[in-house]
Length: 245
Image (cartoon, rainbow, N blue to C red; front, side, top):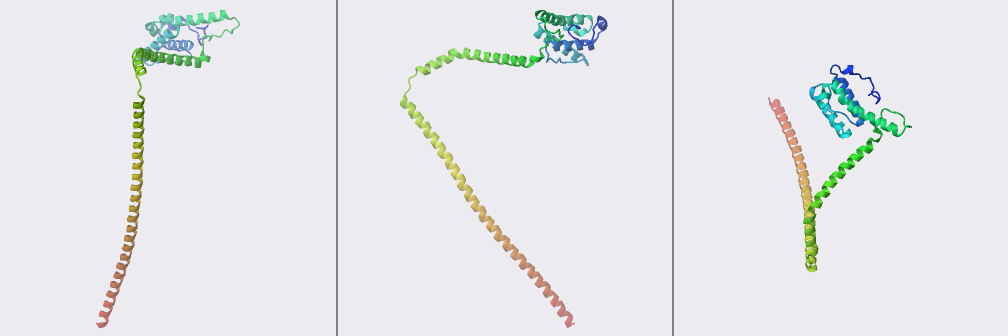
């Protein structure tokens, strides 16, 4: 682990008693070396989270590095877990040593296996692989239907076309389309005429309302005048009675 660049020193004494914190740190670090953008699920707060992390790590190492690890031993977080983790570390160290032997001029970087600078290419390759698989399945389905499609195609090509019947059918279709267009235009004209009639009716109602308001205003003025006259007559009557007394 030190040769690979692990940030701290590890000894067997660290695993004399179950040490899940260190196992979790090693799992995440090794997973990042195998798959730079990998993020292991789970954690250390519960049994379910630990099981989820171990399961995810095992699947990652198996799919990316073809390594089969014992999840039960890793979960124990003891010396047996160290042996399982060493399988991944030894694989990474072998890759590092092979790279160093092939090109001695390359700087001995403990992260030689890191391919983070080509993450975009890896993602694009995966996307293309998925698309190719989907298109291949679609093409396979089409090829399976080809015998039936070929039979229908041959029947259609061998059929003699009656040009007069074809022309008559096209003429009928054109006439039907023209009739639909004429009907749509007639509906539009009817809507326009109905709208104009409604506007005229509203205008008449508006004029009638204005005339009614004027008449009401005039009647109100007359009523006020009558009330004033009645008040005046009452005052004169009272004055006249006072004089005769």
